[in-house]
Amino acid sequence: MTEQMTSGFELMFTGMGIVFLFLTMLVVAINLMSALVQRYFPEIPVSRSVPGITNDIDKSVVAAITAAVHQYRKNHN
Image: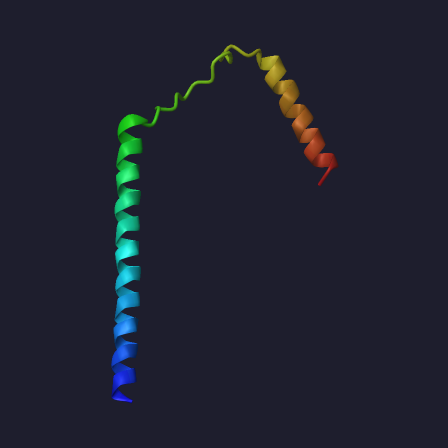
């Protein structure tokens, strides 16, 4: 009985050690890949303005669109 318990504990600790080593290597690999990606492929800053759209939209067009949206919401609610 004692020999089986010793064998069981050895097997358990061996398995837990292998899993621990694998997870440790996985964390190291993920951190390494993250550092490499950030170094060689830096994030491109996003511009706030959209090309091709200007701020000189006619006020009558804005009023017409606003009225149309208001009418649509009034009829479809």
